Length: 70
Image (cartoon, rainbow, N blue to C red):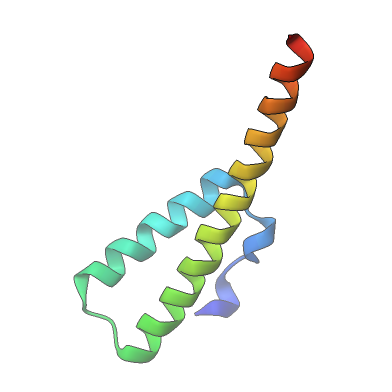
């Protein structure tokens, strides 16, 4: 499964968010075998961290832009 997936770091925020939403839906269904569930969970954690990092950078840029504007 992981061989088909793009590296998390190469994904845009939107791509990572959309994949994370799909993983959550799959996990909530409870239909996957344990090993698949664990892999999905790990991928989801990585995606969530990547999204947070992108949002943190964006927030910092906005803060800097606001400070310059004042």
